[in-house]
Image 1 (tube, rainbow over the protein chains, first blue to last red):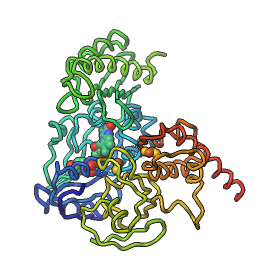
Image 2 (image 1 turned 60 degrees about the horizontal axis):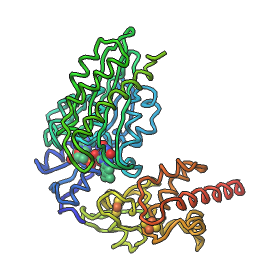
Image 3 (image 1 turned 90 degrees about the horizontal axis):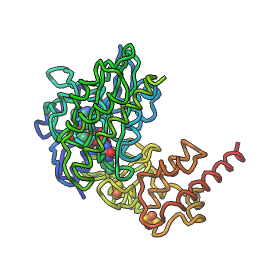
Image 4 (image 1 turned 120 degrees about the horizontal axis):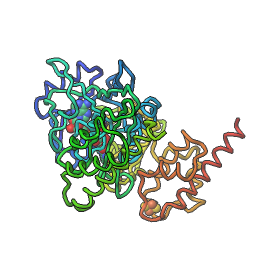
Length: 290
Length: 160
Ligand SMILES: Cc1cc2nc3c(=O)[nH]c(=O)nc-3n(C[C@H](O)[C@H](O)[C@H](O)COP(=O)(O)OP(=O)(O)OC[C@H]3O[C@@H](n4cnc5c(N)ncnc54)[C@H](O)[C@@H]3O)c2cc1C
Ligand code: FES
Ligand code: FES
């Protein structure tokens, strides 16, 4: 299968890429890992007139700690996250999710930022970044702005990015207090998208729960934040009762549909169980059960 | 557009349309038909090649993206008429039946053994989990990779 015809540029600097994308109008698209865009172009679901390949731009491939946050550049591949010590030490929810994304071949090319820009409700990074309260940095000819991931993900395959904006990095706040996080994913086989995925982040404050982040994969038109569940956890005493209650509230927040991967009822039940389990694990990681 | 690419150690200059996929440039322009197209929808790994040593799906990459880079296909495994230890091991352990998945399997295995010369069965299964085989049931593929690892470690010790 061949994609429809398009023009292609591979600029060597971010400035040139921004200019090229803006010059290409509404039908120009950024090419990052290509692991979602190229399949869509082959099926002719996407027919961009211009591809701006950002893979030759230096300086976008780093994972770095900077002033209380982790900065993940636009060319950081899923597999770079799998291999990152920094991530393993500081953000267990990311470390748990990364090896579950797709298969090893796709992980070698697909990027974290590209996944967020793709806004697939079955994408795993969307939930992880919502649970962590992350934001992306977007660059356009009119300058730079930061967008919370909660505002970036608007609807299925729809973000709040303007056509001339390039995401240069995602910024994850590094938890200052005792914290833990976990990602659970039910998949039919390796490489499959989630039937259900659950991301949780738990921060402990003096024996109580400080901030809790909970977001769900593949059970709605976009990655769903379980706001009510987060709210009852904040300030609560961590433990089986609180976690079970959060599981019930998260199941209420889910909007699953029947499909080949399972019935809506089944998926809702998985959300409930996974949220409870993931919170329990996150609490252990945070040292809470000691 | 002109693509300058090293394939199996040889320099090539190929003029392609931007929409040409890497796998088609390899097969149709360079006549390296060892790289197979299985699903053509990014799901099977039959088209796996090494891009600067990293296994990727060549049906999910544009040929122009390979400009200035180095590609290894299954044709690049054998040296001077000698099968690569991985090829030898697939033959010995019956790591293939129809052979359709085999080029991709062997390249994914080659990348694994480059980074981990002594992988356990779980490591092997994990590294090959993007490559689908409809025939073998994988058991002999895993055996073959283990055997190749052993043979390559031995050669490395003798050489060292
Ligand atoms: C077989 C298969 C299985 C998969 N399984 C999973 C899975 O289990 N879980 C999962 O989460 N994902 C899965 N994916 C998707 C994969 O993770 C992709 O890598 C990811 O969704 C997109 O990232 P990319 O870098 O490849 O982006 P691309 O494909 O290059 O781009 C995707 C979209 O985002 C835009 N874009 C990309 N980068 C930027 C940027 N920096 N600024 C602005 N716009 C940008 C592009 O224009 C395009 O519209 C799978 C893919 C395949 C082929
Ligand atoms: S042919 Fe490329 S993944 Fe199947
Ligand atoms: S040997 Fe036939 S698909 Fe693997």
